[in-house]
Amino acid sequence: METMKDSGLKWIGAIPSDWKITRIKYMSSLKGRIGWQGLTSEEYQDKGAYLITGVDFLDGGIDWENCVHVPMKRWEEAKDIQIQNGDLLITKDGTIGKVAIVSDMPGETSLNSGVLRIMPYEGYSRRFLYWVLKSDEFWNWFNCKNAGNSTIVHLYQGDFAEFYCTFPDFQEQERIADYLDKRCAKLDKIIASLERQIELLQKYKKSLITKTVTKGLDKNVEMKDTGINCIKKIPMHWEVSKVKYLVDDSSTYPIGDGDHGLIQSDDYLPEGIPYLRVLNLTFGDGLNLDGLVYISDSMNAKIKNSQLKPGDLLIAKTGATIGKTAIVPENIPISNTTSHVGKITFPDNRDAKYFYYVLTSTVVQDQIQDMSAMQSTRPELGIDGIKNLRVVVPPIEEQQQISLYLDKATEKIDKVIDGKKKQLEVINMAKTATIYEYVTGKKRVKEVV
Image 1 (cartoon, one colour):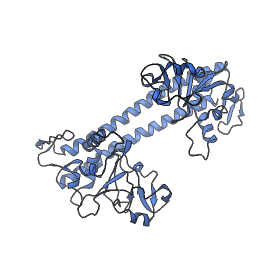
Image 2: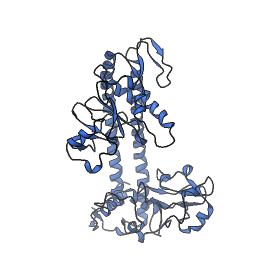
Image 3: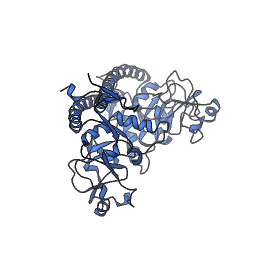
Image 4: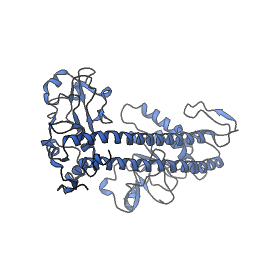
């Protein structure tokens, strides 16, 4: 039976009695670029010394193909960060805590100020430290360090130097690293397989929706060519129309968007009128109520052009989220939305759910991307863009048949996807637990050899 002792650190708990604890600054030399030393992005070039930034970390290594270059004088002036193969790196900015071990270095290499170089002293394994920094031993410390501060966007070198590590002798460090290399590689294969399966199912779902909203359910129907690349052929008796010709004319604002700055985050309430934002929309998975906020009745009354009712369609208009969609469900009788979200109200003689599926299909999503590609600045789908989206219009009876069919078909696909996501969650949790247990000594390699 393994003898354990209290580490004295609440984020670690008990460790083997023969393990030690020290700060990382006593285990390794920590070096980073001092500020930018005058280096700016204007100096980036196609040749010269490689410059590793936080976006270049990939699967525990460096994506050399995408690294920028800087003049050789920038490499020469920063001797402490003249990178070598085998160096251990961690990101301090952006996505904090990405870790890599440098290998296959193609030439002289330096770091930007968002990356820290860790050079273990004799007796400490860089491969073991790599797994420590990938583990909850590091993240539990980081979260304790920054408890209550939701705005932390930097891992300060001075703070990181005080990070406590637990460790055995060098030989066991190496054995742990060997075991985690092999075990996590197996888990990563399973994770990659599940992710690929989910991706294929999502593509199948989208292709099924696109095929159904353009071809219908009758496989023997006569087809005609629309002359529109994103639509191509449709049943002979169907039509293609712009959204502006299909909306509810009895509505004061059949196509509208939100408050344009009237509502600020300080106006959000824990209850009241649901206020749907871009984060509540998805790419083909309906309405996501996580993070739902509310506004007052008086605020809702001031924003008339985006007041929502069940059956209204929502589409994100700006930025990287452009094209995200949702349909307002029956259980939200009154709601409102922001200026980043466009809303479309269809009349009773149109099946809103059918047109929701059209919005999620490549029929509309390709048009949105084409519109975005024509803009030199931030992608924007304005009200005019929404009005001029082309959609396929079957007779109302077929709209209803198609939406019912797709409701059932996509529900089946979503159940399979959800099952795969749960498996993925379990495997990721197992990987996280495995790394933590071995780098803190709660499980020993000799137990499984």
